[in-house]
Length: 451
Image (cartoon, rainbow, N blue to C red; front, top):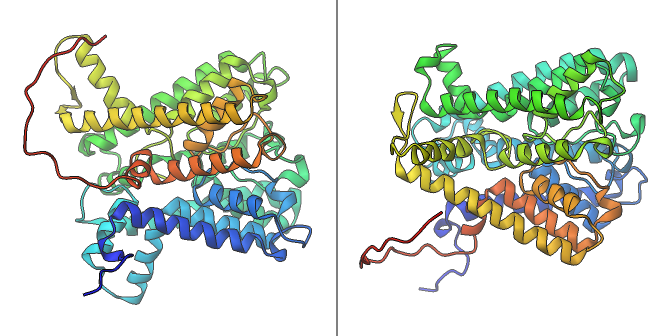
């Protein structure tokens, strides 16, 4: 019997999911290259269309052309569709078709759906998906309705499309905006730095999108009874709250006399909160990064790298990963060996996985930064590091105008980082390695000096 060179049934879930995203990116690129997609009616260059499709599908927000001025309404609709597919995970849409058609999902399909949302087990994955889908539709609809009160009085009927676009973009932590025609190209939401209603609405959408689907499920099932939440939900909520509040205080201290010096105290507080929320990992900015202090830039780097909660629309190393390592470090520093939190003990395997994720992320960032600076030595270390972290953490913030500064080779590198960040650093590495059976021979142990 002839052996198949390409057999979907034998491909790992990781490769199938990565291949699915790659296919969506290819389709998005072709659609964005159509004359109807560009504002000038000529059609976008292949690299511009490809970069935009990758950024939208990977819910990042990095752009080489301003979304409002470079793309038509059709092009913006393509981008928004890619954002929605990328935010929920493409397997979620296959599950939707299965539910609507009344067909029972196969075990293989359930496994793919589980891996696409990082679920721990197959059981209840369809129930989780229903919560995710319903929650997404409700939250995005409510967000759009709220934004209507700000956009329609200012932009008329066009404000309806703008409200929908920014609600979906914020919830999916994508960072795309279509405000360039009104506030200047690449201005993001800086034109609303004095509008607390818009900034707070976007903040809530970003936080809900980055909360994580499993946390949603816990809240849906247990309401506000925190004691009944799973350990994952407790750590995720605690870490997220600490990062938001800590970032808020630090940004206010760093930026009140820098990028926020012309604002009154109320505006400074709202913008400090937005600066704390957006880097994890929405990619919208309400202050000018050219005026941001070095301490503020570094704080943004850290928040981008940490990202949101696992199983959410956000990217980054993830809050729970960092929390697990901090808990393990505390146990080692106190020499207690106790990795207890909320009345539970963290298993060794979880700590090993968290450490691996961080090491892989840091390794990819350092190698990519080195490659970027070799290709473009005129780019400063600060700008290069900021852009690389923003790409792999699927944030979308940038301290430089990518379309003007980055060479084609650098844009391809950033696109690869965005894809890696959406698939997951460990999963991205596994794409190029074959699974090997562990050796049956166990070598003798020998201690080494560490630290």
